[in-house]
Image: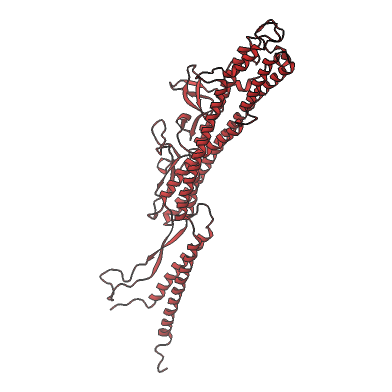
Length: 537
């Protein structure tokens, strides 16, 4: 007949003390990181230790197996990967629409419509000054005011064009800064991969490193849409060890972005596709502006706008045309706001661009060009004060549509002598204001598509308002969804101080009980060893 060890009770109590103590330490760790961004609460998984005796032919003959106590199986973090996926998807969409909403909001501030200082009001004042000249063609003061109002219109065009291009430059800086931030986050993830790869094969779970890596991936998801894949680190890694992470670029539909060979575009390579050292390798993200590109027929074409996104680089080997860069996120939102080459050309074999700012700049150029040419054409039909010849332009001639808003200005001769304003429709008729009246009607001339000069500008401002409203609505909606998912994730992974305090009391009582159990066993052993067998001494 066999029996357990004399010290069996001490060993059981000792294991209980050690396990409850580890739970108390973990609870203290949770409480300490209650406000740490990205931290996931951790818990100790209690497991029964192997019972005595183990099955075998030479097992001692006792009534049955005796429990040998408890042990800490492993310390793991509480995390739901599905909620991580949801959060990153919403964070990605929110990043894109927030970038667009911010860019369009700045455009609305620049255009400043409707207001008493916007271009529309300035042009209305110019038309009113033109009508005043039509009413009093011999009044030098009215003519001078008309010139001044024309100069104000020119300055408004130039101001708007300059401010829009300034913001374009800032958007370029934001894109470059965003790409640098993506590369920094990839470097962080790579460094964490290296640390995790050294810990996991020893049978440990580097929970804090997992949290840091997940936080970096969360931040990365704001800039581009990504997929995270994990590879086993081997050795004695536990079954729930995450392994090293690789990052693959996704498009807005959640499908993998592929290169010209049809291979997935990886921002952080998997170990299988890495170099001889087996480490993850970073493919840095970067934007190319201006330069040359290929049109829809594969012909090389010069982009005449250095502010335009030409292509996106991923590492040294992958170049994605801007029109094919479909990874959603704040970088995509910035690119669509700034402007990019569509890969197409128009009838004059000139590159076609798309984007909120480039479209508005082009619209202002078109408006300035049409307005100037139409006004000059009508002005050349009339005669100045006591003149018998015509053919004088009121505004400086604009040959090209591109750059018209930046170059518009009152003709130098008109600036020096307002008597050259061709208000009369007949030569040497100083009191005739018929041509000035016709000049005031230029605002109603068609620019094509049944739009007048006035309605064309109003349509552009209306479109801007609709775009900004939609971007703000989507930014608010996606932001709310992101917050909702984040709250759900926090309810699972976040630290509740009330819960941790309750756990601390629970583990403290269990620890005290285990200590009391050890005291009882110690007293029993003391009785047997020190106080038995002393009769007759």
